[in-house]
Image (tube, rainbow, N blue to C red):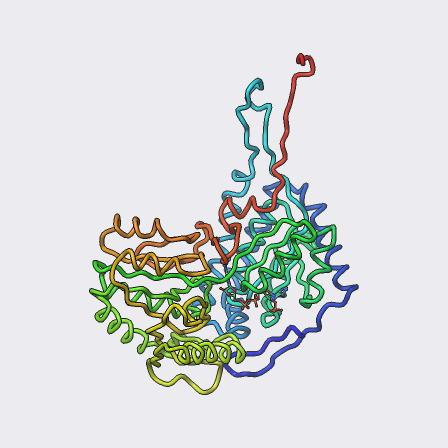
Length: 463
Ligand code: NAP
């Protein structure tokens, strides 16, 4: 295996990096551990100052950072710039709220005076972060900002197709004045992941990625008794109720399914529409998808990016073929996508029966699963008939009704009248096969802390 930048638009291999050997792995863990030992006693205000400088550097050089994303995984340049800004906002969130969220919690315990029983949040140590390519900066910042605020150090294993993004994040923290090793990149192979997790200096593992990777890494975390969090795949339901504003809902669905070329864990992957408005919704949706413009992701007029790699494109094509061979109807929409680059023609899948493999599968690209349901209850039942439980959305002009439906979805996140989204100050996390644990806000900040109990008794106190 290798870590390589292959431009998904031109198909050219730009740069390849060697995989770390045993000595490099050990040195990286040691560097991260040394950083942790100094950082854990660094005052919170100094930690915050490093994060603020990282945010400022991202903003100052936003275009250069954004171009790395577009070069490595084909993201539209506008979306890449938005990702850089979102990453800066996450850093700033912890600059503003980190210290307050890490303050000791005073417990009211029977027989003790106020302040005598406390929970103090202490960092655990080096955390191993395994991250995906679809948001190469945001994913790294989403774990590094809270964890370094808490006093931990982060050892990063990024996806093998975004090595320059990984190096850019490592350099960002160096340039921001973090101690060497606080964010350490490691081009580690799957085979050596166990070596890292087994190392006693490594105290936790956070993985964002597929179910397959999550299950394998969580098993190792269990074997070596390390705390883990998993942010895995999803097949978000996008429910359109009969009283929704059909035109607006269709516009949101086009966006929700196609931003980042449809390669988002919370993309609107299963569009579930009540019978009464199904035909009208489908007509609007088809028209909206047809307007997407596939092309050079650096051209600001492009609205549909190539997929992250030729392999991703071919895998998606196979999934659609399998869906069709099991009885689904596939309708391609819009002008033919360019033959250069790993583009996939936007496709609408209908007539997907529960025994079709597509019914329970995540499609990572511009393929929409569209379901017609008789009523609200059928929509909820279908939405919950999924191995995943990440996000979901409900569209209705009656917010109380939408909330009632949303309340019955078995997911970690529900959005009313917009697709599941990402923001610096809103948490992220799922249930079922979408993983466990949270990232962002105080929930993410405290995933890897020791809530250490401190009980103070009066020396003269009686037994
Ligand atoms: P992936 O193959 O699981 O890759 C994610 C990361 O895991 C990469 O760094 C990958 O390294 C590593 N990895 C893969 N197999 C591994 C193994 N056996 N042991 C150790 N590390 C391993 O995921 P992907 O297909 O690239 O990414 C898309 C998936 O991530 C989708 O399912 C998507 O829904 C999910 N995702 C979830 C969230 C969330 O927050 N819930 C966010 C974004 C994406 P290599 O590149 O070297 O294989």
